[in-house]
Structure formats: C-alpha cells, structure tokens
Length: 552
Image (cartoon, rainbow, N blue to C red; front, side, top):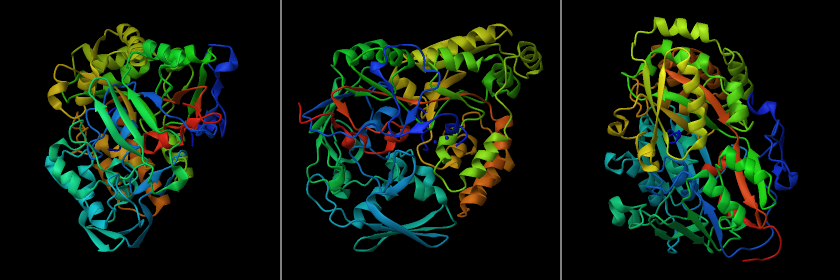
C-alpha cells in the first residue's frame, strides 16, 4: 500500500511479453498509448562512471529512513540503497543471499542465518552477529514503532550462535519471517550507533549507519537527500559507478516531466501515465515498463464507512469501467485485477501453477451493469449516499480514476467527494487513525514487497492488523491463512492461500481496480537500473552508470 507494504504476476504477466531489453523508446516518435507494452526487468548495462545522478521521488520527501519504520515508496526507494538486508530481492522478484550468505532450517521451528565475514559498516567497523540480533530485536520494542512488529508473533528467541551465525527459534513454523528478511525488516544497522541515535535514528538529524553500496551524505529537509558511494562495499561485483545520487522531491507530474525533458532530473520510478506519454515522444531518454507487484484499489477507512457495506462495494464495482480506465488513465500500461494481490508476486515462487490456477478460478472482473448496481444499492444496510475519498494531492492517476468512479456512482445515486491530501498526511493516514477522521475511503497505491502472497492478504484480513480498518473477520479465512503461514511445503501453502483468496474475494470490503506496470524514465546519458517493481527493496542505484565512457 502506499503504506501497506508487506508490511506484494503468472496469470497477470502471461498476457505480456517479458524480455531482457523490451521497452518503449523515446525514439519511437509517437505519444500514443502502447497497445501492449513490452515489459522488462532490466535496462541495458551501464558502462561508464558518473559524478552525480539527480533522481526524483514523485511521492515526496521521506519522513524517515529508519529501515524498521520504512513503509512507503519514497523512503524505501532511498533506504534500499543504504541499508543491506540479510536476504536480497532480485529484479525478477526472486530472493538471493544478502548479508546472510546462506541459511538453513534444521527443523520446522529453527532458522539458522550464516553471515558473511568481513562486511563493514560505513565507519569501518565490522558487522557482527550481535549487530544482526540487535537490529531484529529493536523491532520488537513498541517504542521503535516498527512497521514489521507483527512478524515476531511466532518468534521465541533470536541469538548469536557463532562467530558468523544467528539462530532464530519459533514457537511454530513461520514462512513469512524468512522471506521478510529481504526488505527493511532484514536490514542491519550498527548496534552502538543505533542505540546512541535513539529516536532520531533514520532522520536528517540522527542519520544512519549501515553496510550498503551508498552512505547517507546529507539530508536537507524540503530540498534534497544526497547519498555517496561506499568505496569499501563488501559486494565488489556491485560497486556503484555513480559517485553520488541526489534525490529530489518533485510531486507534480507535469513539473517532473519538464525536469526530465530538460535534464535537470536524470530519472525517476513511478512516473505518471501522462508524463510517460509526453516522455515517449521525446528524444531525451527512454521510458521503460516493467512487471510489477503494485495493486490499486479503493478501500473503506472505518467500520462506519458506507464502503464497509458489501452491497455498496459490489455496486461501485459494477459502475467502474475498468477497460476504459486502463486505456485512458493508465495509458494502457496496467492489467485489471480480480482481487488485490497481483500474480507477479508468485511468478518465481514454488507452487506458482497452483497460485495461477486459483487466480484463474476467481470470478471474472465484472462488466459495467448500472441496473444491477442500482438494485444492490437499494439492498444496502448503509443509507449514507456520499463517499469522501482521499488521494494524494497532485496524483493525477488517482484523481482521474476517482473521476471515472464519480461519474459511474452518480448514475446510481452515490456522490463521491474527492479529498486531496498532502503527501505527509496521505502517507500518515495508513498508520494514524486520527488522520482518517472525516474520510470514508481512500485510493490505495499498494504493493506487495516480498514474494509471498499471504503476507499482503493477512494485512487486510487479520483481526489485529494495523490495516484492517473495517474490522473484517472471517473465521475460515483466518484459519486458512494461518495454516498457510505455518506450512513449509510450498505447494500445500499455495493451495491453502488460494482457498482463502476465494473466500475473501467475495466479502472483503474493497474494490480491486488494476495493477499498473512499473514506469521508469532514464535520460539518454544513464542506464543500468532495474525496470521492475523489485527496485523498491533492492540496491537499484548501484546498477546506474553512464551509457558510454566516463562522464560527469
């Protein structure tokens, strides 16, 4: 989610061509929407060095870079290049070794992490098992306000068990803990530095102390964040070609397009569909489309919201013309969704065929049916006929989506009022109930950041979840997802998940909309960055470099 991170496409991705170099180039000479964009996980490898890259964060300035508290696009885009996790997410959404060179599960309730030797923090201090233990343990402390605290539900102990080893013991098997080590949850900070920084860790004042390919050089609130190359980086194969990357905070889509065209900003993930159309017709650079685990949907913000009524949810779903939406709002670069977990999440997972079969068996995305929608609205328990819906200010895609919904809702007697919130407030409402007061619903630009479908499903269905705003509860769904989390057999776990998915797709109060493809722009002087949504949890900037020899 814009904040529903963990803490997620075979059926989705099968309808498009995945290639190593496919893209829509600025040399195409056309601004028309691509009929079927070619998707790529990578861009051509960079060959030269760079003194500086100016990169944009279109969702605005981060509020923190503390890995324990990172739960949104902007902070994750920066933090993923600073703080290495124990496991590393790859561009195809598979998982590889990170600070842990390997791991073992000698029994169902034991996880042994074998750490790399010789890894150093930016200050030259060697990473120890104690740093790993401290980084994980501080997230159990409510004072840390970690977005990952629910991942400790089955953890019995975490301890250093060797010179390069940490062992985690569980009260019951738990597949989510291991997979979550590929995001901020698994990031390792220097224990003594973190303790000294206290509550200011991860802020402009408190800084960070990690092991990643870049280190935090400066943070000028309201202006920019600059990171510089870590020349002592442990992964010599991924030593950055860019000496530094400067992050800007341009949130207006048209302003960003102008800055990218002029070269003031070199690149950006999450460019809007309108900006992509403008940039495709220029010779300034290239727009790349990548497979994505992003999910867009409309959800109620409280149990008292009219959208918490299943009949109103179904009625709204029936007046939303998703074909027109994908064509006109997403510029053709999206897939309609039957539910809220996009299939790219399990594309590389064991049991992928089971997940795909379960997804295919879900009811088809409904066609527009105004008469049926009117009947459903008449059967609704809630009699409120006005919906106040939040979106980020300046987000044209969400605004256009709600405008489509607004027009359809009007036909059945529902009024949709659009509330545009500033980025900090919009991000904060996912964690702070007080910021949801006066709102009935919000547009969610979500994402599933680890390759495990049940991680995101539990966020919206578990009774004690921070994001279960409607107090949704289905005993069978809870039981199936709980059993899946404790099941180490991947095929059986996939079966349990798809059975739960079939149930919550019927009664969970949200309106699935689409899964947008990743849209990234690189100007013609740079290349190398991964093009898939996996960038959100991998050191993507370390791949950046010049398209030809050394340049500044």
